[in-house]
Length: 488
Ligand SMILES: Nc1nc2c(ncn2[C@@H]2O[C@H](COP(=O)(O)OP(=O)(O)OP(=O)(O)O)[C@@H](O)[C@H]2O)c(=O)[nH]1
Ligand SMILES: [Mg+2]
Image 1 (tube, rainbow, N blue to C red):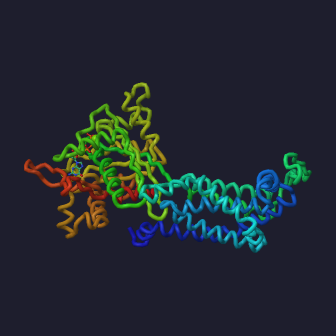
Image 2 (cartoon, rainbow, N blue to C red):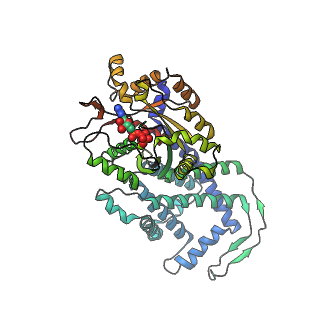
Image 3 (cartoon, protein in one colour):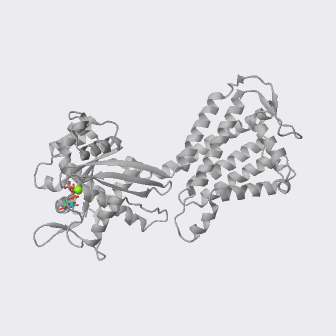
């Protein structure tokens, strides 16, 4: 892979940040212009926002405070700021919040140039409404959880982020409608706020600046949506013949996620599924040997857990996959293509077919120990499965890559776990000498991703996992794997 592409990949998050920053700069101005137009339009046309402001002013705030329309805008601004403060405190949303602060300041300056909002506020008069808005926003967004944050717990202010999104998106939609749609207005009289009067404006469409406003609004809402997202789900389906290392691959990914939890402030509970937990119990008990037995035919384990990907824009990624006995691989193509009728399939086959159809990523394993021993790889089914499904991301994984370590070290004089990239390049070059694998790489247009458990050869000549002082197995390639999955 060329250096430039590698650089872009490694710094993708920082580049995204710069991109968003540019976008906010570019959007804030047309958005505040549209806001100012909307303000004018709703005032003259007696639009619904105007009616709402006047209603709040006379019927809600009026009885409590000496109220003007500025009281209503101050309360709204306060609400927005209260939510934004919470988003700023949320470790997962810090950067998004920083960008929104910048956007807010630009928008306020923009509105000021139209004589709106800030110049109209009088702190002494609107102070209570502004502060009240901040407090309501803060409490509504889940501000009480801030205490947990100080106690070192992992806290997400999902509600604040979501509310902020609705406020921003709502405001944009309302402004857009006010500027571009003319409709019968509503007048709220100061003395009789509960008896709205219709103002007959008729209907019409204002096309001035319509494309600009429409474009800016859509981009703004889409960006805001991405800012408040916390989660992504990825459904995997792992393909591989018997004993190709499917179960240990999924466990390795989990162990890596567990390892990450120990060294991060953006943790979330991993929430492993029931089936994964029962496998992990066995892992604790067994000190010697491999962790898992061959998965019994007929048994389908649902393995899933979540982890955090990314540092600038972290997201919770939930990874789920079915683990099944490799014996089924050869039956999948017929079941998938319909060559075998649904009624003829047994329960396991049906679940696997559904699993493939529901998945967004297929993981194709290539068993390195078979490769090293020149045994058949049994991957011919991959081709027919790839033909039967479309639109899935594909990941080629070389399992048990430790069997190539000696060769790598003697040829390149490097250690794979320290020079993983070099090792990947080596594995790819080595494996593509095999025609079947070369065809698979060409078909999927993917690099092969090597993973392995550190192993040693025991007295009987078998490879068994090495364990560190604490008795945990050591894995290589899974850290990069989780990153890769996060980027998909
Ligand atoms: N050297 C080495 N051997 C491995 C590695 N991973 C798995 N193995 C070996 O491969 C065997 C099978 O691994 P599993 O994960 O059970 O394979 P599977 O694909 O789930 O097998 P089935 O459930 O029978 O389909 C293990 O018992 C190990 O002997 C690895 O990283 N290095
Ligand atoms: Mg298995």
